[in-house]
Image (tube, rainbow, N blue to C red; front, side):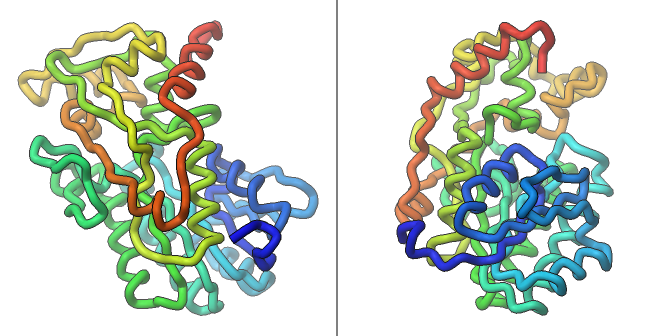
Length: 320
């Protein structure tokens, strides 16, 4: 459907202060009324975009639904695995999301897009490659630090089938990287010295934040619902991509299995958190063909484009 034929809607965007949220709002604001929400910090927007700093679990969040006739919700406001404590992540990611779904039902919202993560699959030596959307979500079996990510997705799938009028679309992207992205992988690629486990260089996929913003908007504006991987059709070995980004590799022993975790903990590496160690050992390769076909989406940024950006960051005086 062309933008000129899309009926203007009022869209609530959570996580509006993040790099992805800002890009999504920029794509929507010319043809929709956008409402920005972020529970972490105030979001400074254009004058005609209402902005709220509010906890999704608080009463003030419902006031937004009362004051605005919300047609759709784009839920990007997920605390990342490198942010805050496990308890805080569970409260905000799971309980906050449940509150959002309940309000969406109550106020007759017609479309919800949920930003999940490929971490829910878990990194395991026996994972099939590529992973389709029907693969089991094993992350919570492998580490307690990803329980909130799996629970958020399980909750979204319950509402997907329980409340068909919400037309929920759940997006599981691979590693999102690029300008302004502050997740663990982007921080790692920004470093001049990046750790890698001796004997391991798993295949990985990388998605530019601009391409992810296009995917979110496509999922919202085009008909459909369900669970979709979002990933390019190409991939690269982890250590090869570090070299392409001009990172010097710091070899870490991989045995015994607890040793790299203890090293990461003692060094305080937020870009190499202990609970994600297995993702630097075993491949988690997504089959993104279902989303690409259903929503006529293709990434515009190549691996060469992404690595060029991170090479350019190495010329700055301080590592990101």
